[in-house]
Amino acid sequence: MTVSRGPSLERFADSRSLTLGVELELQIVNHHDYDLTPASKDLLRLMGKYKLPGNVTPEITESMIELCTGVCDNHMQVLSQLTETRDALVACAAQLNVGLCGGGTHAFQDWSERRIFDTPRFHEVATLYGYLSKQFTIFGQHVHIGCPGPDQALVLLHGLSRFIPHLIALSASSPFVQGTDTGFHSARLNSVFAFPLSGRAPFVNRWDDFLIFFEKMTRTGVVKSMKDFYWDIRPKPEFGTIEVRVLDTPLTIEKAAALAGYIQCLARWLRIEKPFEPHEDDYLPYTFNRFQACRFGLDGTFVDPSTGEHRVLRDDIEASFQALEIHAMELGAEDALSYLRKELAGAGNDASWLRGVHEHEQLLPEVVRQQCRRWAGDSP
Image (cartoon, rainbow, N blue to C red; front, top):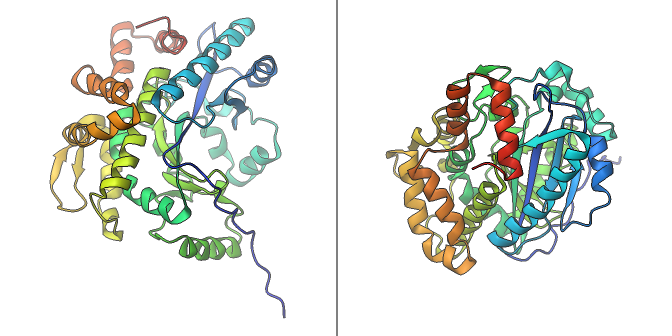
């Protein structure tokens, strides 16, 4: 009797350690009332004439577009590539009389008006998840970190997991949903949590054990590939990376590059200094820490997985900056940490900026208009 087996996982590709790749999902809005508009196909057509270091691809609904860097060595390369692609996208958007902006959610769009982009994969997702697929018109930044091998990738994944609340709080830019201030700094992640295969990866630190887990999951028919996992951090074997997925899309490319530089510094610190050994018990406060960061941003409570000590998240972020200083020097990421430090000491994250604009203007379309100006680089 032959036992059928599920799809096999790709071989973990060769990858240079600590290389970076960044993906940014962007909002496409009209210039009439700054609502989302389905212009991704036209944008992709115009972008076809540009030769870019990365690429631009569709996302699940037609009011979104994703830009990706190539493989980068450091923060400055990420910033350079993001700038080149951003400028091309802004030029093409101007030809279509539409705007582009960052932010983890659109402030007042109606999810029911969204259109699924016409690809087999997106239609399959829409068929499986129903209305959730249109509610997935949310916008995130994904950061890939190159790993020398699969076992090292899993160790790094679990090490970085304790810094998920730090990354959420720093990147948070989604306080508004369907015209309402949610009270959250990152409401976007509430939409991600609705998917059944979201949250944290299982605690295994050997690739052979991960393959056993993956085979069990595929045997059930629940998953077909790694794309079916919406984990906060997941392995990306075809790239030889791990992919950090919790960040809201920032309002500027400078912020996006700085966050990528911070993650690279954390990865180098974890790999070289090995400040702690990952354990399953590290995940005991994981969901609490994640919620605190989403709800309260930089002022959320962080529970140290090792000691149980409660600290204010912004204080723990500042402590991490101090621990990373030598690694930032080695990676050429001093400007990245400096950028984030200034935000930490100043007005705070992008969610605070968005609330400040709304408090002043009292009009959400004006908030989105100013988001577009920030993304294009023509507003402080």
